[in-house]
Image (cartoon, rainbow, N blue to C red; front, side, top):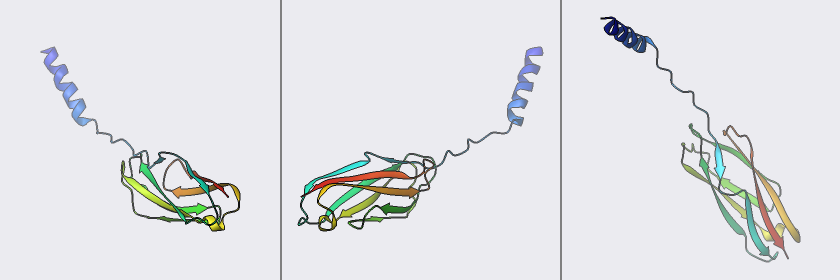
Length: 129
C-alpha cells in the first residue's frame, strides 16, 4: 500500500509541475569561408562576380540587415528575407577591377544581421596588374 501511495504522489507531482520550454538561443550566421580569392586580374578585365552562401545555424529566423564594402570598386546585392534555422541565404559581390588600385587588393566586407554573434567580416582578395 505504501508503494502505491508513493507512486500516486509521484504521478501527481509530475502532472502538477509545469513544463518548461527552452528559451530560443537566437539566430547565428555561418560562412563556409571568410576569404574569397579572385586571383590575378588586370584593370582591363571584366567585373568579377562572387556568390557567397551563408547558413543560419541558430534556432530563430536570421535577417541580413546591411552589408558594407570598404571601397567603391565592390558592390553587393543581398535579400533581406528571413532565413529560417538551417536554411541558406546568399550575398552577391561584384568587383570592378578597373576601379581597383594596381597591386595587392584586400577589401573587408561587413555583414550586419540579427545574428547573436554580431557583425561578420569577409575579405575579398586579388592581385591587380
